[in-house]
Image: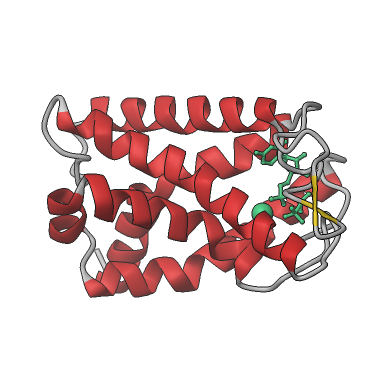
Length: 180
Ligand code: CTP
Ligand code: MG
């Protein structure tokens, strides 16, 4: 396989549990705001776009997708680690994605941006940052062994592109109010 295509493919494979977490939260959405309407300095703490239902469906879908990927061990793709530590890796990828997304919204509200207002790079990469933070804290060995500089750079480049594409699809499906 062409080495560039292979790197992109591996990067997508490794980040897929985080991607699916983020996409499922948006797809299923929810009603119960995590911040319960609380304000901080006249702005919502997180806003109505961050719900408990989104958090739980996002985490569950991403985690299950990762288990499924791990079971496909016979196809030559990098693994999330040996049993049982791959469970921790997958937890970091999906819970970290949700955490990063919450932090992104927290930052946006502090900047006075309303729910859904665009904040380039934060919107597209907050969940990646959250996933990498938890991996670095709790699955460091696997993270450092698996995520080469090449893979990290690839993820930073392709994630915003994939994010824009999926958000556009979500917008067209009527699941998202704005196409970003
Ligand atoms: N979502 C949710 N719960 C979460 C995360 C996301 O219900 N924990 C759903 C919401 O319906 C949200 C949608 O997924 O509107 C898209 O997520 P995102 O783009 O991160 O939220 P925005 O609505 O753009 O809000 P923000 O400005 O806070 O990013
Ligand atoms: Mg967001």
